[in-house]
Length: 593
Image (cartoon, rainbow, N blue to C red; front, top):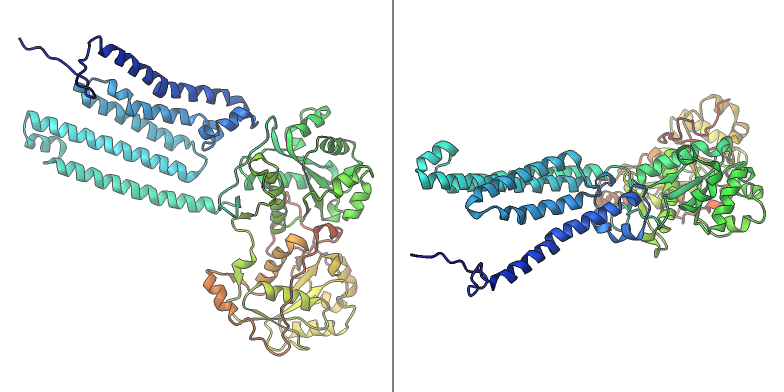
């Protein structure tokens, strides 16, 4: 009688089931346990050990070493990589344990696994990036369609083998194998196209969300925190004059930097006696400088602890006197002398807090850059240029139609501000003639000399209003440029102009330092600047920059005053485009008399 003998496929000299074959089987089983099963068990144990530090957002040696396992996933589903590995092992290995004569059962099991996994991906969306979730669902559905196509092909061949093609056509609706394959390929192609469009739409939608991104990569920076720390930022402030502002800072930073953890007393303080411990567990400390801050006992505890622990600092100065703002020298004078050098003379990042959204964004970017530079991922960097989708950028605006601004010689400082605008925006021209001529706008620059140094200015403003020439008012807030509180102008401006509604329209605030560019953009928009649709628009509009009538000025370099020299006591006149975001409180604006 004939006897069936089996041999190894890789080595036909070895007969299966013999003593020579058993060691090979044992070795193969060991490798299966060590690699496919062992890697799954190892990854699962590592992720389980990371549970507590990840939940507390505490960076440890283990969480850093295992970042490749969990960094792509939202915190709730940090373990998803283990599930993904298990799925791959089942589809590529475990189903092969089903005997070959039951091959169709293998397909059924694989199809069910793909179906459940695709549904789970669509429901829980474990990835941080929206486009990653879309692509993951798409690939799972494509794999599912391929398995379904294989199922149909197997069924078709089985029916054809046992009966006829006509029976297969009657059952499945296909009269040949090619029709099944072609149909499935078309279905896979349509699915891929559909999800590709979805991924592009999702990516564009995400790109419009106002989050901070690195200029170098156009991607959000990866937040990191030192070992044993809990918070990226600690907000140190005095309740009476800083509570509302730091609440806005926390809320806005959480939007701009998703995942950031910020300590704020109203949210995180459990024991007032543990302030020093909270400082110890924070990576960067923000001092919100306002009146009374250095006279607060608890604030001084936070200050001293921060200095003793050598914590990196960020200084944010309140600008509005009505909200506790003060000049930097005045705030320094409140600080104990022995602490002054370590706070004010160490070149810590310093920004001014204005209660107008566009200017707040600048301060938030300065704060974000400072805390990112102190994080483990960016410790070697000296600067970190950041950008925010939708922020006001000078290069994004230009003048597509004729625009000439009249800067009267009788208006001290107007010519210099006009030069800043001309230097920044293509297509704008400026006239410094004695009369408006063909100017489309008059620039009324308000500083300490306005309506004081030259009496002609009042008559020129009056004439411009009679001629219905649009007047754009700019309130200088830089003391080095003659900035004074807006209330001053109700004393120096002729009463007939005030009564006639000169200050009915909100003046554009001109702040110094890195906030200056935002001031220029808001002024340019009031002069008719529009978003440039392309670089070609800027080049075309810029080609006529120097075709200026007699009396036009030459371009001058912009002088941006240092932040530390700002006298924050000046009330700011909010721009018409500015939106208040400080908890519903109104910005500092001029009062009608």
